[in-house]
Image (cartoon, rainbow, N blue to C red; front, top):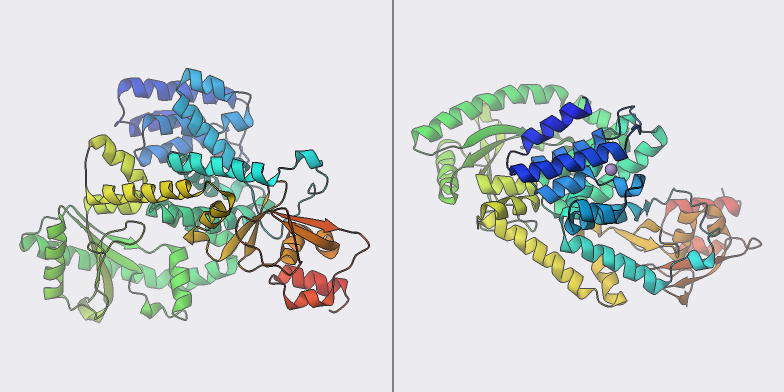
Length: 496
Ligand code: MN
C-alpha cells in the first residue's frame, strides 16, 4: 500500500479523536515521512510504512493521540537526526518521553546464549558501566515504563509489525527475533492481559522457532479443523436461536479457533491426542450484563449436558491478569464436545486489549470491573517500582513471574545474557564466547569475587577474568547447566 493511502486509512481509524488531535497526528506523519525519506525496509517498502503500521495497531487499540503520535515518531530519534527536544517542542513533553522510552527499550538487548559478543573485552574500561550506574539506568528505564505503560504498548506494536514482516528480514535475523518474541514480548503481552497481541506474537514466531513442529501440527489439525468449523457454525446458529427464544439478549456470538502456538503447547501436555482438545474452536457469546452471562450459562446447561469439572467462573474469580469470562464444555449434537465462553462486552474488550482498554474506558469515563482490574495491574507494577530503591531489592523485583524459568544476567558493558535458571558463572562465560569460557580464571558478581561454580541470579552483573594460557577444568562438568558450556568444555578437553 502507498504510504499516503495507508495514512488515510489511519485517519479513518482515528474517528474517536477530535479534529485538532487529528491535525497533530498529521503533523507527526509529515515529520516522520520526511525524516525517513529515501530509507527502505528490508522488504523494499518505504520505511514510513513501518511507523504507520505501528500507529494503526495503536489506533486499533483505541489509544490516545499522544500514543499514536509517539508511534509514528518511534524510530526517528534512533534512526534519523531529529532530536527529542524538537519532538518536545513541536508536540509535547509527554510525546517526547514516550519516544524516549521506546528508544531506550531498543537499547536493552537480549543476547541469546548462542550469540557472539565480539567487542566485550575490546571496550575501554571507562566505557563500561559501573554497577551502580548500570542499575540506575535500568531502574530509570523500568520506572519510566512503569509510570507510562504506553511505552510498552508502542514497543509491542512495533514488535508485532516486525514479526508480521519477518519473512522479508535477513534469514540470519529471523530465528533470533522470533525466539526473543516468543520468550520476552509474548509473555509481557500476556502479563498485561493483551490477548490480541499475545496470540499474534506467538503464532507469528512459532514457524520460525519450531519449523518442524509447526509443519507437523498443520498436518495433524488441517482436516479436522475444517470439519469442526462446519459443525460449530451449525451449533452456533441453534444456540443463538435458542437463547434469543428464551429472552437472552445477545450482542455477539461467534466461533473462535484456538491459536496455533497455544494449541501446540496444549497438545504436548495431552500426548498429541487431538480428541482431548475441546476448544479447537470455542463458541464465544457476548451478552450485555453479568447476570445475562449466568442466565445464558444456565440455559445452555439445561439444553446441552455439561462436562463435569469443566465449568469455570472467571467472573467471580478473575485470572491474575484480569481476564473474566464463564467457561463451560458441553456435549453438542452427536456427542461432540465443544467449549463455550460467555462474557460481557467489557470483559471481552479487556480480554483482547488488557491494559490498553484502560485508556479507552478512561476517556469514556466508565468505571467497570474490567477497568478496575486494569487499574489494579498498573498499581501492582507501580508498587514494584516503589520497591526498587536499593539494588538488592531491585534485583529481586526484576524477577517477574513471566520470567521464572530464565534469568537475565548483565555483562559489565550492559548487555543482557539470557540463561536458564540455576546457570553458573561458567555457563555465563561460555554464553558470551567459547574463548571466554575456556580461558576463565576468576569472576566477580556485582563487584565481589565469587567462585566459578556460583549459581547466578536475575540482575547479577558478572565480570570474568581470563587468561589465554588457561584451560577448562574437568570438574566444571559437574556443575554447568547449559549444553553449550558442556560441549565446549568436553571438546577443549578432548573428551568427545
Ligand atoms: Mn520500529
